[in-house]
Image 1 (cartoon, rainbow, N blue to C red):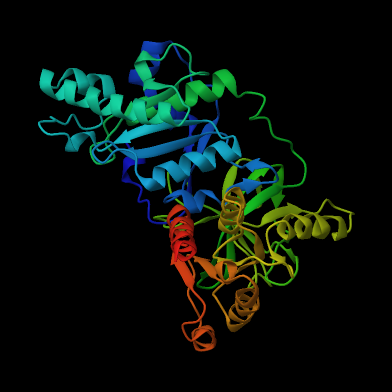
Image 2 (cartoon, one colour):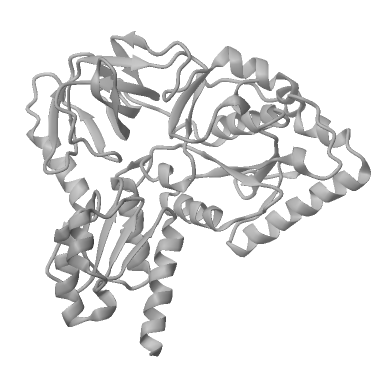
Length: 421
């Protein structure tokens, strides 16, 4: 088993090839008369919902399907509700991994066992405890508008979300989880999984410094083929960036982009769907969450710079209207923050990437003089620069958090309190 050994502290992309999937899933596939037909799975590990925000395309998500990992002991938490809202907004189908079954009192682990074999081996009281916890999930999901059940009890996967009991620590249920994932994608998503062999389209997950390479991109190619020497266009801090691909590096199968045991393999091209590290000159100002396009041979990049600028311009805004100021760490999180605020009827004056600077405080002061309730700054996962703190002098409220729901809720609670005074 490999899946449960991966850490969830950073974004990473790992490829599970066909033979590995067959080996892992063999005990489960026979029961459901399923066969592995997909050439492999590209599993992107996003630690919490904020990383998933960068897996975005125009009007949707890069992800074909998602695994929502939920702590079976703690139940649905605030972050879980926010993740579900994001999946709904992106129209991304998902299954639930009910993790940490090994922490259920009295649980007897069967390392790397199937979920059903492990459940069968438990005492009656433990099985009942597990069922009660799953029923609690089902009730909570029903309240959110979803029908769900334990995966082996589901009769129609198009109408019911599958819940798979697993333990990332012992490996129990991982075979079941991957089998359900494969079965769903093969049965219901074949047309969505088709990709072209044309120029690459992708999204930037992270911008990272690498020794000997300088600034690099960790990206997901979701359509087409990216080749060494291709000209690519992506978003920068001030304007779209146009660079030529110097090197393409991929993790080995079953390794992970962020910490591959043998570092990377150098390749000439990367077909979709794949995670890739891109080395090029001039990536210092690249933005995480940016769309990425390879310019077809013989074409000029202007059409693609316009596409990138238009896409980014939907969320990086600077207006003169009365509204709050937003700062976030990536384009994906900025988009999610702006959308959620607008859902709550809160207008946005400015929205941008990076730490809170003096400029944002000055803008907030302008708004504060007109409408004090909107003269605030909301900062998601970013810091506040010294010049901003000096300019603010405690006059401008700055709300900071690394969970969007809690960031917005803290502002709304403050606003209601001010209105009641």
